[in-house]
Image 1 (spheres, rainbow, N blue to C red):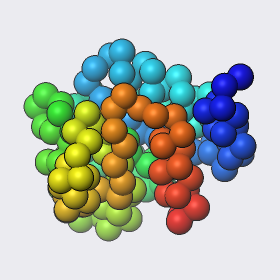
Image 2 (image 1 turned 120 degrees about the vertical axis):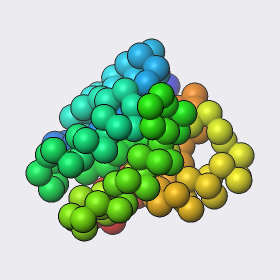
Image 3 (image 1 turned 180 degrees about the vertical axis):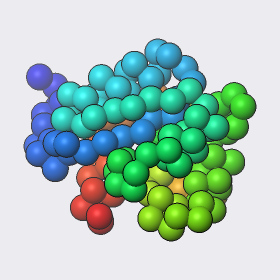
Length: 143
């Protein structure tokens, strides 16, 4: 087991039973993320674009998802627009669900743009497992 895998296993208990909505249009990226998340005890639902993501939040009861992992560059509606749509929902409990950008855009200005769009965090692609779980642990502990 490598060091990265060891670090991930330490906090897995806090993820058991948590639900993630993964908005990712690339099948390979989604499969990798889903495998990593499910091994940590998370339940994962995947959508392929921002419109599907917004609709999934609207259609499901409050509390269905603990976190949304949002790709930025998706067809039909990008992650920034989808985040804006979610933040502007009339149901304030749904509007404040934590959203984390997952993107190849990893410069400081990209992180700032994600936060300015209403996101709660930013993770660069390719996904570093340790970074992913640091951000998720932070969010779960705040809830």
